[in-house]
Amino acid sequence: MHRRAFLRLGTGAGLALSLGGCLTPSALEPEGSDEPYEPLGRVPVEGAAEAVVGDDNEIVYLAATDGFATVDASDPTDPTVLAERRDLEVDGRSLTEILDVKVSDDRLVVPGPANPGDDEAFHGFVCYDVSDPANPVPASEPYETGYHIHNCFLDGDTLYLVRNGAEGNPLVVFDVADDEPEELARWSILEREPAWEDVEWRLQYLHDVTVHDDVAVLAYWNAGTHLLDVSDPADPRHLGGVVDPDVEIEDQRDLVGGAVDDAYFGLPGNDHYSALDDRGELLAVGRESWERGSDDPDGPGGIDLYDASDLTAPSLRAAIEAPPADDATYHGGTWTTAHNFELREGRLYSSWYQGGVKIHDVTDPADPVELAWWRDPDEAGFWTARVLDEDVFVASSTPMIPNASTEGALYTFPIREGEQADPPSLVD
Image (cartoon, rainbow, N blue to C red; front, side, top):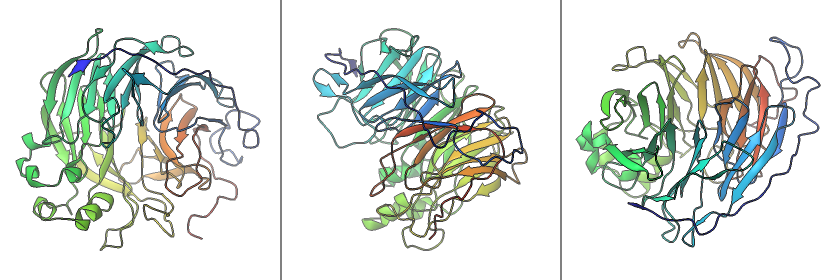
């Protein structure tokens, strides 16, 4: 593991674009408004994937496949691209397939590639100074990891990376306070469940990590969601976790060939994105899956809610099902499976690809109540939903759904109850 110098950084200035037809006269309508529920604004962002909100609650940072973009959403009716950095290179090698970025204070981490396969690409991450979001500049030299990075999380000066393809698919922790990032620790599911060592690596894939108040939440696909005490980032300690009761390690170990694909793309399991709420007492686990034509459960995955007031023993309270679709297969179907989300102040803001975005009241986790749902399956495939401020949340749309016409963009939505006017059907 070592650092390499940038030889070239592609740059580009973004153009301010607005949504036009779907804007409301007022940025926000009161709770219970009779106005149709719809986006406040939209700005195209080519190749958009993950979106995160800066500490100022105005700037949104988007992964954009071949780079990243910054968007000023301070006026939610007119989100404006401030800057784009495209065609990134390190020592003549592309830093590409950037599907995730994370921000903390004035530092933005840009990792890639998200998946294995391109041996010629640069594998690692770059830290940017975004104190001026209209002019992001490298804050340190690129750090070469030698492995693909599907997702990460930045908590102050501590960076958490998912490292897949190695034994146990470990979480890797870095100190990025100085110009030279330093690896602090690793933690693997094998430290808790050694039996997973004999299971195909994709079925124990560490897909994502989130951190809240010194607790790291690891989504380990069929191996479940695991909570770590990272109060000392150099010494992660297992607290507790949840595993789909329909997943048996013995069954996973015996899978070969196409059965591995079925277990990877289809239920049960598929812990894809997991996070605690802002109080650290409610855990949500999103299950990304597709229809495989197998026995029940089969189809798009939903979001499970757990009481996490005791982090050593989270307990299931309710399951939010994915929107139904006539064809929920991976290739050629309509994607309505759960993707990324945020829990904030008793609300769940969720994305469901072509199934749209939703707001649920989860103040009673045993009885989640849907407050709003908006979708446009022909144009929008939502990757995430993130709170901007007390009145607005943002959601990124991705063009990366196979055989679909969805477009890369950032949307802004009001935080209120409401119903979409003439919502398009997902089952016709």
